[in-house]
Length: 334
Image (cartoon, rainbow, N blue to C red; front, side, top):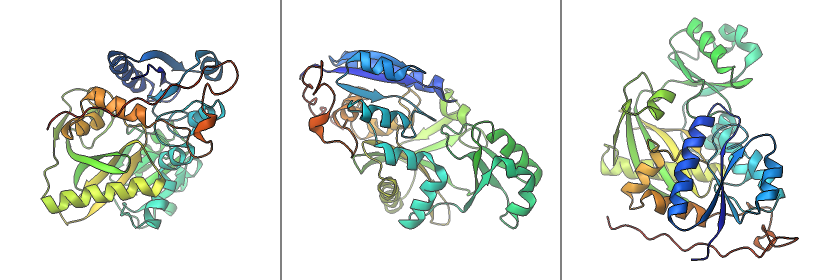
């Protein structure tokens, strides 16, 4: 295996900065243990200069949220000719924008809960805009992850309060019909579902605290579904990832109801990679240990759809020739 200089990009400026730092450190350590030369790169205001000076072979994106998961950093890396992990610019932007993602779900016949968009400056018009939409309802920032700013409301007054809180993170919001069901996450790698895990949060829903604080949720792998429904959930997750064009490692969040229906909530193009994150749990069930998963994601790094591989990093100027791709990760026996 040819040594690569891998830059693990972490931190960022979103509300998910601390989670990104945890993801980045876990990934960096795993890659170092596998013989890669790793640089930990904090994503801040001078990130373009840092990337130019680092002379990377590849960037491993351990970012979450705005300016990290939404196509912005991906676009910068394409300009700099640095291959990167995860989905390309367009898929990242579409998956991050919950309203656009839902429009694509509907286009591709992927079931998703009813919804409508809400601008922050229209919160005072909620009685008119919400109309007969009904309750309970969920309100979320349109472009944020990790359930940051998300809240459940039982009436108009609570909805207005939750919308005001969500508006701290985005001027555009999404109001979604509450659907009662099992919360299931599906891990998808290169368009193929690895498995599905069921989450049982101890709180009202799978919020930020339930996701990242140890002991706040129970997990069941594989998800407690009949074989037929389990296969159906995997298929619908694959369709959702395809709808937004997501590639590499993806997590798809699904609600599974008692009434034999499944609803896709969202597609996460840079799923968390902390010790409590779902993607590593799912991958482990499919035979990948944490290092295997990091290696698999790294191997799939590319330059998106806009630049041919021959124009990748280190192919011109003062840089050296790009290192070869790492070998396929060795799978554990199941």
